[in-house]
Length: 176
Image (cartoon, rainbow, N blue to C red; front, side, top):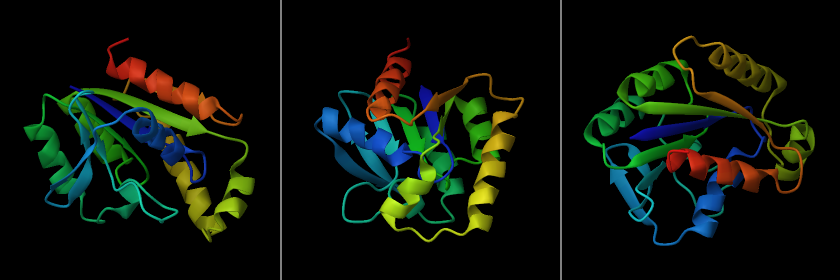
């Protein structure tokens, strides 16, 4: 089992990358395990954790309960025939990543962008500077974690870079 965790500060394009999985692959089913919601694709042997679809600007793990950690850990111990993919601040924490690294083959992906200010304006979000600085610190701390040797950093500044990142993630899922 591979676990791919995608993180980055707000507005770097994490959700857009995940949405490519729904756009380019069919036959998704919704699932729920306690407080964990997600989508499963049996053909890809993939579970995407988080709530996607609908009108919300914020999707993915941001729409899960703040108390989701124990249920997510339990899901990982029960699931071994599906790869797991998630993005977002709710699960992209040092403790969850360390648990994932001890449970399966963890690949941590950090998305960076120089275009976040214009994306914040486009999304009309109201995240404070203090909150955004806290996310930068959190991501930088995760970059320096000693337990995870599979950290990859991708830039997402140009028009179609999110598609290239999606393709790279598919290669990881396929063992390449």
